[in-house]
Image 1: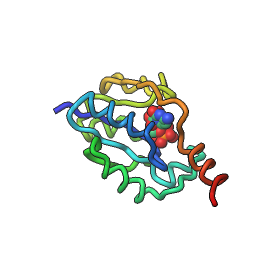
Image 2: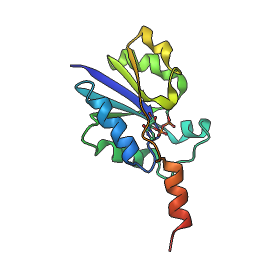
Image 3: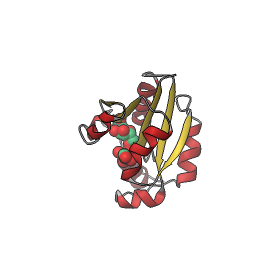
Length: 131
Ligand code: C2G
């Protein structure tokens, strides 16, 4: 079984996230998503609309996702690779090169980011256009 992992906030889930999750899952047989905790989001200067528990539940409902775990820190990735026997680490290419240190532990793949959609813009658009 080829095991894939990816990391992210995945707030206000949109088709860019779904495309990433589908392409990641299609690289193997089992997809683990490390979902950023609310506290870790603060270190990324992100304030998500949905709480960790809500974002976790939403991710668990996605057909391409097999397991959702919490992402608490930047430093947990190597331990995660070993703990979950990960074969492939996948991120959108806005992170190109940032996680190449993981190549000692697994394959590292950066997938093209979906243009013209992001949670921040979606939230701003909904706020500006609420009735
Ligand atoms: N993504 C994408 N296309 C978009 C938006 C996001 O492919 N239009 C991808 C990102 O490249 C990332 C994943 O979807 O791989 C999740 O994006 P975010 O929720 O913004 O996650 P991020 O803040 O980048 O957190 O340790 C890594 C960090 O937790 C990544």
